[in-house]
Image (tube, rainbow, N blue to C red; front, side, top):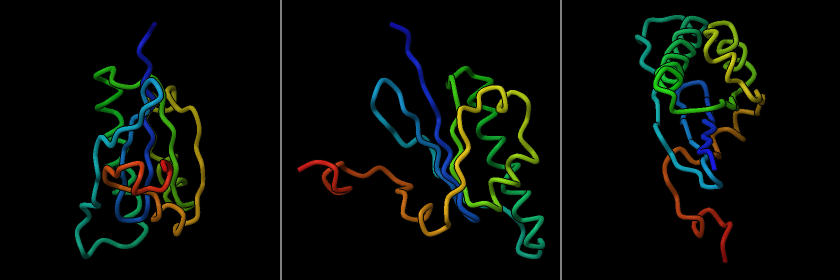
Length: 121
């Protein structure tokens, strides 16, 4: 049986998380905070962060660490990510999902137990 890994990027306006889903189990790979300079305009901050996120995904793609990518982001961030998405990530793109900022902020960005997340009794 082949080992298949799908990376899920969950991106808000200022932070993001990359999770991996492999053989039925999910694991947090990385939490990413926006590194834009304070004087950067809001539009440029969004594009700068999108570049930062695509850099992280590109490194994983170059290392062969993932077989596919799913992106969940606010509408604004999803548009920015699509503007700067390199071809190697576009080829791996399985799905892109536009989510409301409050939904994205509710998704854990750090490992949690399944009991704490309310999925196990």
